[in-house]
Length: 418
Image 1: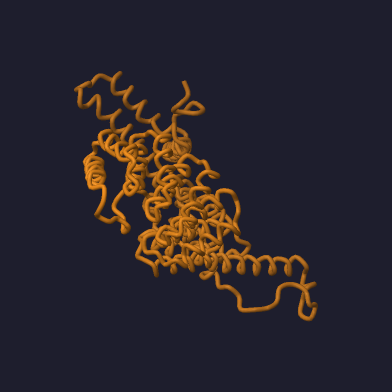
Image 2: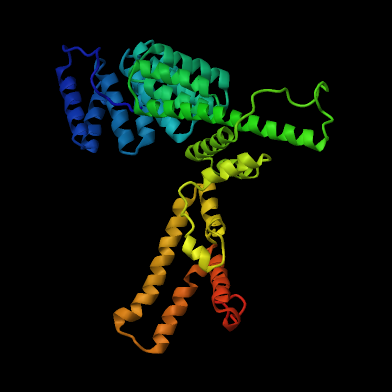
């Protein structure tokens, strides 16, 4: 919200034409960026004894002084305008004063100024005052007081204030986990006027509801698996007629449970809760029901690079066993929503290795010492990354398999060892 001097529905031509002309001149100067000159002209009106144009000039002076950074002078001028009791300029000056104190974090002074706006009797500014008081009550932890002011704003139907206030209020409700209440506020805001932020919040409400629905499916599948494990552990002690265990019902199929785990984890990541998303993936992979665990892992690995059957044969592996050394890192990146970071690391490493290898070639350095140095730097490049040691270890193993007893003995920690 912003305040300005502007014109008033209460303006009237008539007496004191000189002061009216000065106010018009000061407004034009302010709008063209000549703030210091505008302030001087407004001060002439304030000090000139005009009764009709004092409220307008004092408000204009408050706005200009504030824009100039002279907060103290701006507040003094605002107080002058408020003291006139003008039905239009007094509440606007109080509005400006409240914003000034709010921006400075002075809750008590801001609350007093917003109350002056309410006490002015000008209904045009009541929604903004209630909005300001609602924000301040929220900051003080006065939930009931804040709710009363939020409701006053929403009931006003103001197209200027309600959409923005509804966006603020609904965002707070959503952050508190009150998705249904947030949805109701969003709809009331949109009734007053279109607002892109409210549309975004409406989507966020649907995400929260989906998280709740998918979470319920995951919890039900976990409860079924735990109940089944309990029955097996008790050798049927909780059998038919015992009254123990979970009530029988339609079981959750593995594909449904796995789908719920995937969607829950991905939506949590969208919400920005990466740690919780990773936990959901981890719990799904470790699910008591092996069928559910397999389904979850298949979904986690969707789109992964398929093993190369020819390469697997060369390494003495079956195709379904030829899992690359890098796959645990890719799985972790998906579960942690950090795949872009891992991709970035790989491209940085590739760029560094390429630079080390290409530089001697570009310079025409063909001596053995230069080439060996370039190779050492390129091979050591991955060492700085968490996945670098696995790459080195994989090479040692493939070297051993390829050369057998003829494989060279590499020092421990190669290629980083001295």
